[in-house]
Image (tube, rainbow, N blue to C red; front, top):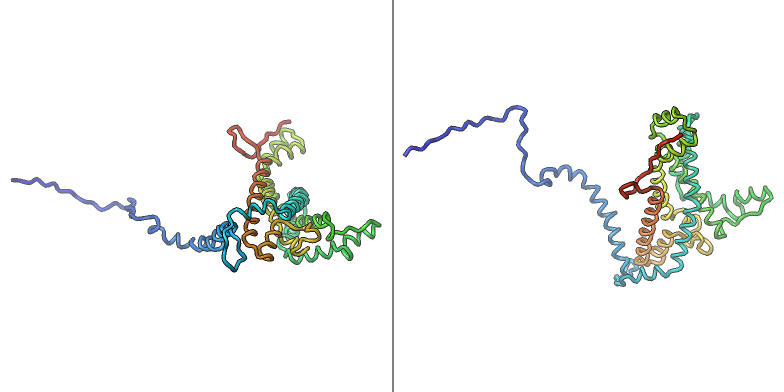
Length: 326
């Protein structure tokens, strides 16, 4: 019997041909890359993810931080709903947020438009306006406490010099709220002004030139070009200011102490949470307050986002774009 054989010639791969891909899992192939980025995820898991999940866990327990945990279920949240001190803190927080955020964003937008013009020493002004944001808030709270002191404060001295009645800034309900709001405005106006200025500088000059060629007046250019194109930046500033305002802690704590001033007029949600967790050592209730703050901040941020954005034809939310008509 004869067996026919066929000779097969195997040629080496030509120069430039792609090398054959190695088989194996993605972990075995890219382990150096995963190893390089692993420190961030390890630190986030230990100092970020674990505390978040653990706070949710202990919010269902009665725990003083030392002894044995006692499961109480939703009792902490039920008590939270009927706690008048918590709702007083919520009301104080929203009042301070309104008194500070609205003027702050308006002043920041005004400063941004001013710095966007061709003025001298523009870089110096930017540094000066941003400087309060990087200044120690503890030190500035002490300074503001002296400036707004009821007896020897500079503000009351100026009012007295103008033959006006002095104001109990640090002992009355509204005086405390106004003082804290002024501190927030002083600290964050320059920061938001720099954010708005970056948004203004991102708008192309060609858009303005085209509107001027069409004969559009200045007020229409501002209302139908500048503000619509600046809307995403305004949305960012409003949401971040909302989250920061609802998480207010340093200003009232240093200025008024843990008690939040007379009648707890300066007691904010975070300061109340701090008192329950680290003064009364009720970590379960403090964690429940923290999660309530998270829900309130999220709902309020969504409301702000929906108010600033609008629906498009597909029912989705988007930033408004407006044409200029003259």
